[in-house]
Amino acid sequence: MSEAEILVEIGFRTDAIWVLLQWWVSISFALMAAAYIGASRLSGLVVAVLLSMYALTFMTTGSAMNSNQGFNAAAIESLSVLSETLQLSPLGLHAQESLDGRDSVLFRLLFWLSFFFTNGIVIYSYKRKGTSDN
Image (cartoon, rainbow, N blue to C red; front, side, top):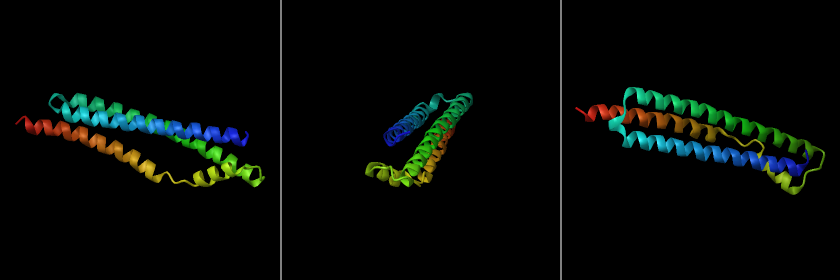
């Protein structure tokens, strides 16, 4: 692949990760709001179905994001090869430096925290319903 193709691929993959993250956040907020507002109608079965579907969505979204991050890592490795052969433009060098070794620990932490907080809000809403009925 040429440098231009690699940089385009990195852009596409980074954009895909961003779109997936926005989609995930919107689902999380929608589920939290629906559970909190509709707490009086929640049953144990509904909560179990919601949390199961949310967990499956979490796994699918995480897998898609990891796949895109893997493609980005391979593309960055290709930029490194071009850099070693002195065939990399200043733009390619900048892309390599800014993306190489970028730590995704914070991203993964936020992704997992959103999962646990959303589950917590749904369970809290269900339990709150039980205490407010008394």
